[in-house]
Length: 342
Image (tube, rainbow, N blue to C red; front, side, top):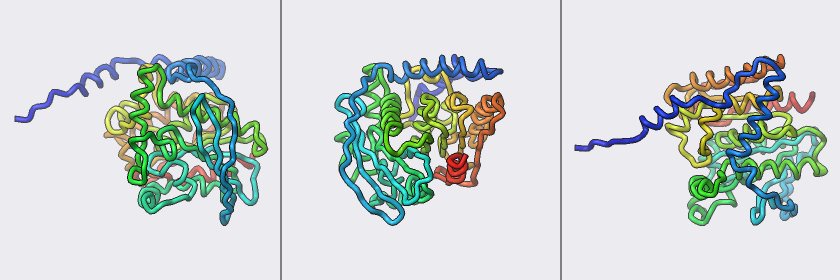
């Protein structure tokens, strides 16, 4: 007899009986601005960013490769004491005046896959997710910054290193240790990206326009820095606009999703509402399994709440829906080109 006595129903019970303390409810621009200010401070605390120490960036350029459409430079900055972030700078032949931070998801060998640095071991995964969006953006004239997030690519911890683990990440291992110290992996990643913004806006590349885009977990990171940093002017999110209960609690169990007490504070829709009125595009696959058991219905519910924030400003939130699964679809390309030309 195989009876199992699990705790999932109790976890759902607790979730369903918790009210989001910072759920978006503003009915005016003034209320929205006040809500956003208070929630920013709360998120910085919950993520543990307020416990993180900035280090001198110590920018270092290590490699330059001339490609067909662009120049790919490999560089490093130091974001925190003893924390090095490698990243690519993709420079186009004809710069359109706008910069984009392209944030990778899982299964792309970090920054490599999205930048068209494809190995035999990563080819199938990159083709399945169609996630060479940094490469596509530089062809369109953007200067693109492609960092390795903590736990991925060249930043995998020892247990996940080696070519045989190239598609794996150290997210859960890092988050387990981080939350025991009062910080979080999402906070570490967000802080690293904010430090990358610090570098970009002081660099020769910056002309006053900076966007962020990302697929899957990279979409979550894009939401965080788009919500927390006014220097980000536009945000594109693909494959990550499902609610915490339907998706994260059920089938998207990577450690990068989990932050103590976060579910008592917000849902994904509230992160999007913080970005308003900045240009925001969300792209979704109807058959994306990460949407959860209710499918695209859950995504529509999240998007509709975020739209209420944009309505306050008379601005449009773009939501592009595709008949497909979990992948990057590319609606963001025209969106970002339109934004860069304004």
